[in-house]
Amino acid sequence: MLQDSRNRARFPALFIGHGSPTNALADNAHTRAWRALGVKLGKPRAILAISAHWYTRGTFVTGQLAPKTLHDFAGFPEALQRIQYPAPGAPQLAHAVASCLALQGASVRTDWGLDHGTWSVLLHLYPKADIPVVQLSIDQTRPGADHLRMGAALSVLRDQGVLILGSGGIVHNLGHVDWRDAQVAPAWATQFDAWVRTNALAGEHDPLANLAAFDQAGRLSVPTPDHYLPLLYVLGTRRADEATTVVHEGFELGSISLTALQVG
Image 1 (cartoon, rainbow, N blue to C red):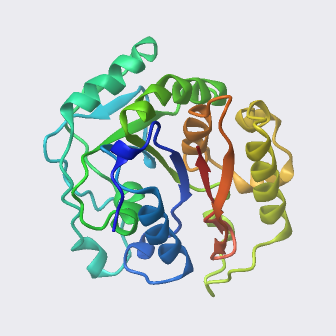
Image 2 (image 1 turned 90 degrees about the vertical axis):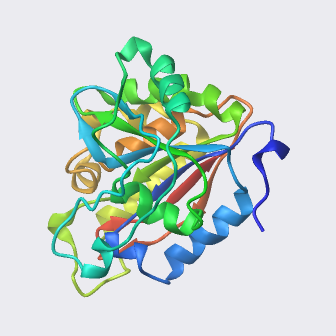
């Protein structure tokens, strides 16, 4: 049974490598870990999701009372198109998020919803879909350090029982996928994944935010920033008295990391 966030002074933040959309339908080591994590964390008052799949120019927050379940993919099983995650929205939280990010010009929009980067994970973390969810877009025009700072600005929401959930992937290179569903990754992928974990656990965030300085392993692992940047928001929420821990590890399709990190 889920605990209630009222028993917590500050709710943790999570980054989860969400992998393929088909994980929404799967019963595997990754999805079982997500379900166990939801039970362990307990029930937050609300969820602020930062998904790789709302990648914009500008910073926006979903403000609907009933956000739509978006099926923002093609070429996958029809069963995925039928999935609904009917979590309520939270307009008051959306405006609070925009207020936290006023310096970045954040505004509330109602023309998006919950994309698969959000609901494919939440289906397992909180399958009842009874927790209010808002989604924050990722401004592609900003450098990595800005995303860290935005995470820090949002950290106050954790004190109000809000789960800040980043969904993407430390390693996400679709050009190097192994369609045999290989769980063994190439050396460059495991090297970069380990480097990120080491720095995150040590609280060394600045090297992680300097994407321009990544070595060859980093450039292969992060060919585009969209899946990587949600990690920086989550790490940015960390307080000086908190630890970052690895709560799940693994790869799928060779070049997609499902590493998950928890702050707090």
